[in-house]
Image 1 (cartoon, rainbow, N blue to C red):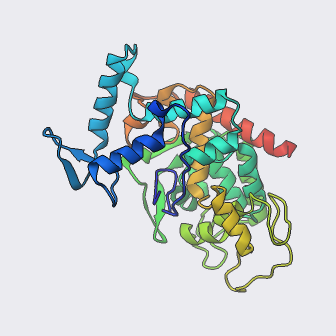
Image 2: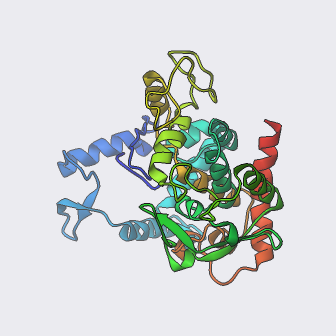
Image 3: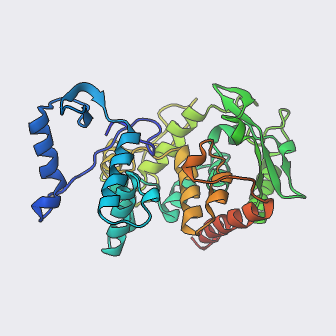
Length: 348
């Protein structure tokens, strides 16, 4: 797969599709039959079919007709909540059934391209020096986008009311408005996370720009992409054991020196990078932490409207939430996530 929602950088990944014992529900056999009958040899694999049965040569399916077809099939099958059924229902069912069958969490996530476990997130974060460690902790505990974290100003954090005002973001090294109007909002600040930020403030000292995370080189905003490539992505490679030096998951490679003195980074052996990509850890990035945050909200059965308000999704259909959500509701849901994260971190 060249790209997906969980692969923000387009690194691509391979998904294994096994043969099923029952030929009537075997994905591999069905796919081969479709390619043969439709005479398809190049992408896209799934193409439009008109009312006369002719297969398009180039145009792929749109999601909306697929969802309609799935709903119609569910209705014929006697489904009760047909309105909630969509193409995503198969993906959700796949994960649910895999868990019921006793499939390990990391194996299920590798197959579906989902985020890391909390333990794996901390293996990544613990490999990072500050300020990147505190940045990542903040991203994991608030669901903020990296461009919003890089633009965060101390004046926007109210430690008395325990709130964070998100209204700016960094794009191409410049501070500007956030991604959408819906992203401009006030977020709850859990007391434990407030303690982490205050500790960073004492350690880093005051900056002329007033930024929470100013660049140590320019004093202004960092660029998100180099930080991800040099630190987050390379820390993700360290989630597997190194075939060359024997470093365990969560440990840096041994016996490696900085190849570039001016641009420091986590040094990883080539074979370890290849092993990490093969294991599904080749695209760990800033979005991984935001995705994990939203996953934990679902795990704690947070109301859908709060799930939509905390990550500030612009498209309401993402979480099917409408209306204003009281700060107390957002604070309670956010605190559940933060405590699950920071308590786990303190015991590691």
